Image (cartoon, rainbow, N blue to C red; front, top):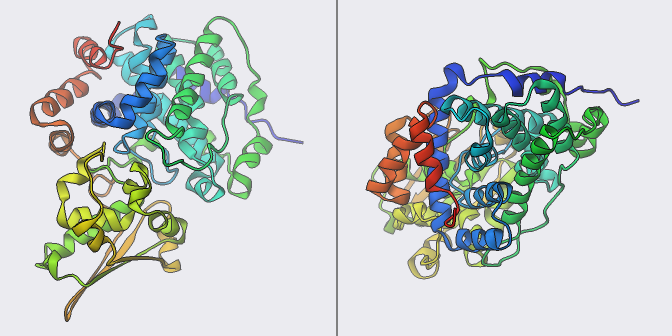
Length: 438
């Protein structure tokens, strides 16, 4: 018989936990989320997704879905390596879109809603199996989007623990499965699907607020195992500690690159700094864990925008020859042929089982560069933005400057960071992402 994992403790956490000493770190992630939102909105994919998702529905729930889709498709939002979950893309859109429905519209309520949404999304993902879900063809962020969004929205609405438990139960009942492979279209369906998964969580909280109940007994060992198989483990759901949140382990991406490629990008930059001329490079060998070797080598950059972001050979070509393009979220003007294609052809990727021991807490890469008679090698286990090399305010401002422009970027970061402390700044931030006709 399945063992019940009652939602009571999770609901109490969602209803009562506060960002507290984590507020400063949270503010950095909110600022990073704002960068991703603005960059996503400016991209071709973002405009297509936003137009689709607001054509027939301009409700607050639809707005949350739109913001979530646009933010996630930017591929420049934060990520938690042990779960491969981009938690801010779940919690921040809900908090921005539904803030007007809160009985307490303070900056503190906004920050606490994001905090609990991130934390419960990450804990559920760990319980399901964490990053191992990727090997099962599943998308961890998509799976936990309703749950995290329900927690964030319930806190924003000020629901008590009992009603929050019902919101979480209703969200669990809407847990999606695999979205399928990404089609090489101008806007892959995975982005609107993700937005709708976030919307489902917001709906669950609004329904619970109106007295609609779910089934709290749904979350049990058998249910978790049905998703994560033998890797499922409910322990993270029982270890709630506001003083030691999982979001503290999250990485801020420095560039628009798949996280699986950023170790290699950092490694190449370190080797180039030793005086290697990109023009003289004969070959580059990348060794990574078996979990993602195929992913970062499989598709040619020409296949789609997303393929260009996932392709390690192209990312290294950009890092060596056209570094500013690493910050181009849209990738519309990127010509992977010519010098970029020639450089990418020099890059080989293979799996090294010895590196599996690092994964998934770290996503390493060993880079070997051969240039004539010179051969240089480096092992990278952490790259800029990881907890071992954390971003501070200056680094986030630098990212914003590169991605959205100096003037707009600085103002956006300052407003977003203040939004966790000041209601006026929160209103200013929210209005920047409101629907045009509101």
